[in-house]
Image (cartoon, rainbow, N blue to C red; front, side):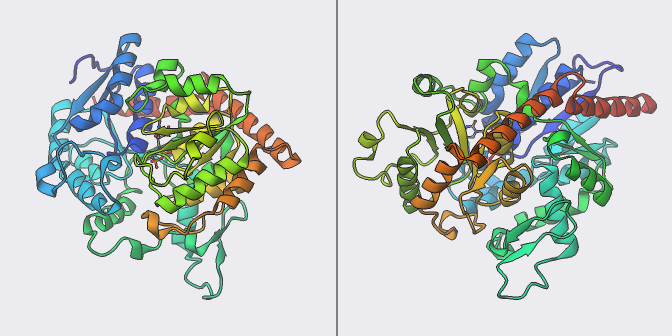
Amino acid sequence: MPRGSTVQSLNVLFFPFLAPGHILPMVDLAKLFAARGAVVTFLTTPANSVLIQPTIDRFNSSATSSIRLHFIPFPFAAVGLPEGCENMSSLASFTETQKLVKAVALLRHPFDLVLKELRPDCVVTDVFLPWTYEVATENGIPRIIFEGSNFFASCAMDSIERYKPLEGLPPESETFVLPALPHHIEMLRSQVSDPSQINSSMTDMIEMIKLVKEVGPKSYGLVVNSFYEMEKDYVEYYKKAMGRKAWHVGPVALCNQEEADKSERGGENRKDRVLKWLNGRKRGSVVYVCFGSLCDFTAAQLTEMAYGLEFSGHPFVWVVRNMSDEWIPEGYEERIEGKGLIFHGWAPQLLILNHEAVGGFITHCGWNSSLEGITAGLPLVTWPLFAEQFFNERLIVDVLRIGVAVGSKVFGFRPEDRPIVNASALEATVRSVMGEGEDAVERRRRARELKELARKAMEEGGSSYNDLGILMQELMERKAQSF
Ligand code: UDP
């Protein structure tokens, strides 16, 4: 039994997939469990400590309960990744994902040893670590899946798998409707993952996806970073159609209330320049542009983006992962002086989104970013690229009606697989979202309403607060029975 554990306290181990978009919300979730009395261990590999150590240290110094970080070594040599490359965001290209997935699968034995040593009452592990189900079950420990996405996206994927709307589609049809969902949801065929992009040499990835589907229904249940009021139709639909236990416990990022929590989330703290810049702008005037921790673009696309933002006439903060600047148009930086800020590297996103000068968010629809934008009460410009981002776009645009699509039409992991969205499309979409038209005003009103609902959901007595309580209580009862 680990330090601090008693028969009365719930002993939970958290283990995320090795990507910022998985690690960061799971740290938030771990904090929520610990704040409610659980004994929490957070498992990852050593190089990922930079993303989370400051957050966990601060939590431990201020809370009555603490989170213990536990590391297992990353098997670089076995998969041919350079030392220190232990995270999706540090891979040189998409094709290297295969190596990371392979390395992660090799963590099976160390994970088993950790379970034998710590004997947690349950494990909360990432949806992309399906083999943890088998190891946990062999050790008699229930595995709860952390679903990095939302109920809507899960229902949409289930609709496609279950009813196969693409199979009977005439070749000339560009769009299809997702069957049986509570709303009329229409998508382009090209926005759905094409299995041929995962080529047959990526066997570990294919195996992993197969196992995700296989062990999903067998796992104890899943926790979802979402809140009931935002997508109640889909929470109900999910539980009925899938018949699985699920708890909505978000937005988990709302546990980051202090400025330091927001600015250090994800590691680096480079807030001063951007805050100074934002402090000088009018309330609600700035568009924040960020495409998460993994997305890359071709130089040609970045150049179009640069013009689109400039021509929109709205001030912007633009986070660019790509450190080179060969795509920056001649004289651009001088022209945008005072109107736009290009931020290279890792930005303090929570701090920026919640700054009063920010009035809109151009997002790739990664679920964390989308939900962080919703929680900040912002209307969104949606620019999905891959994963479940195209489903999130439909949730934002069609169901919540707080966003406008920029017109990203093709699912593509690699930047060169995606057609260019031109400057004029971006300019028009930004103008529409940031403007004063009736639609824009309505969108902003709905976005503010969702912000309030999100906050209430996480407060004591709110829907997410209660659902987490229900889950913890159920696990406690299970534990009591096993004694
Ligand atoms: N993020 C950040 N600064 C950055 C880029 C990303 O803080 O410069 C955070 C963001 O707040 C979110 C996460 O990283 O919590 C990205 O997750 P998301 O699901 O949005 O996208 P992904 O990176 O998985 O594509």
